[in-house]
Picture 1 (cartoon, rainbow, N blue to C red):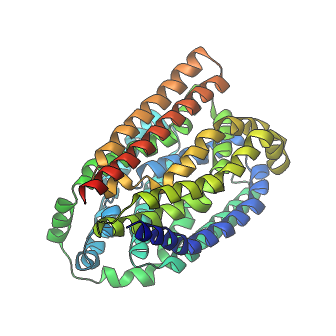
Picture 2 (cartoon, helix red, strand yellow):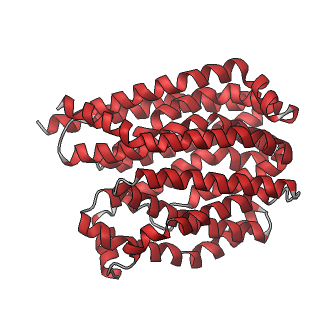
Length: 417
């Protein structure tokens, strides 16, 4: 049993190697481009982009009802016939999403109509991309996934630099992201076309949703709340402290999240695939879980130390004097980013065990703690203290979450004996 889990972890490393290689290329592109982007765009312009990106991350799972994870669990015959209905359903939801965003825009976002239209299109395209990427993952097309990730980043970077030089300061980054998302669909059309030609219908989608109703019922709300929680600072700070500080925070978080993008996101895809295989075969998962945590801790400890010791100096050196505050913020949030880096690849454990409600409960807890820390922290203390309260609270919750996931895995394994 243990050897199977160890083989599963070695399989994860092999499968994620292509994605990790592509992420290293993406890191190089970012390392070269961000010092220029940081000088082309102000912190206020970056805050607008960060709000757009946060809303996109928050809503991109809504059109497909969070059923992408279920695509990895269903039978091959169902998988071939369900892609097309999910695609069609995702596109049709723009009829609901666009009016909804216009209503929200009138009361909350307070951005231009161009912002809302671009966001609605980006949400639909991102949803389609999630379904497309899941199809690639299901069929182990890691080389294609890796190539498309590099292609997307290259398109975004080229357009962001071009629009920045053209002085499209307030919309350049947003337009670059939108076009790069669309480019993924165009580039991957040849692969997905065969699934779109497969016979399917409304009954197929209804049967699929009924069988995997736990995903729309628990995983989608949990994912939504988890994403809302993670993006809450960027969505709250403009009102509480202004766009300038929001931009500084967003840049700090984005830079510190690079290791997560390099390794954790890639590993999370392959961990879910391997752990699902072990679950279906009724084999031990706990060794795979521990090995993944250890690997992530080793990879993340060096960036954590560097951020704490040299954050402000590095940000000034790389991005310029205008981003000094961002480096100071990075020193504070580095701990929670490190713990999140360890936890992200294995966060799908509850979904695999059919315990999606645990994820929902923890997401609600984390959302509440972050809101209280920011709102009341800024009400009674200064900005740095509020961020410290949020970070320490997050650290406790993440540790509890991982402890519970391990104990539930062990309980399931004992039930299999």
